[in-house]
Image 1 (cartoon, rainbow, N blue to C red):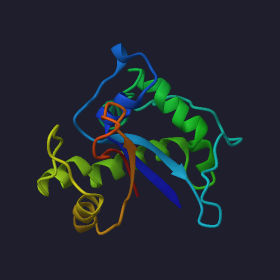
Image 2 (cartoon, one colour; image 1 turned 60 degrees about the vertical axis):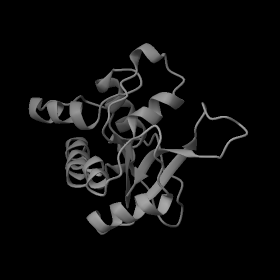
Image 3 (tube, rainbow, N blue to C red; image 1 turned 30 degrees about the vertical axis):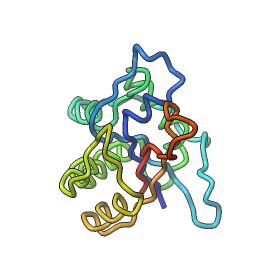
Image 4 (cartoon, helix red, strand yellow; image 1 turned 45 degrees about the vertical axis):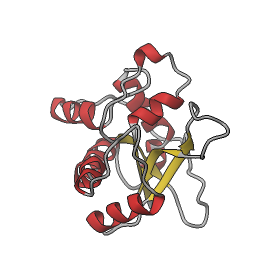
Length: 173
């Protein structure tokens, strides 16, 4: 099976070690990757002996990926796609080729529009409002008929003595 991972750019950028002048904290979920996995060994295989990244030759697909799968940390979309393909996509070549890998990723992002799903459930980014894990999972499950896994991270700017809140970082299908 594949893990389809979407990231929330403001959290990705806040946690990033990359220079902040290149960050793009977009206010929509974007693709982080499509990662082959298996149930017997949930560790994701990576850096397999497959064909290396050839580039996105279709201008139509390239323009779609610039919206759905931007590099929010460094601003170099092509390099991000290359890194994701070489690390994860090469391990999926027995199932799908490079073009299909990127096309399917876009289709899944478009079909599972987490930004809209959460907005329709009145769950929107806010500096003052928080939501529970179950609020977010329930909204996504209701809309997609699939239970996602949420990956959250501690807020590095949070006061150590205050209540512990987490930042939503990734949604995984």
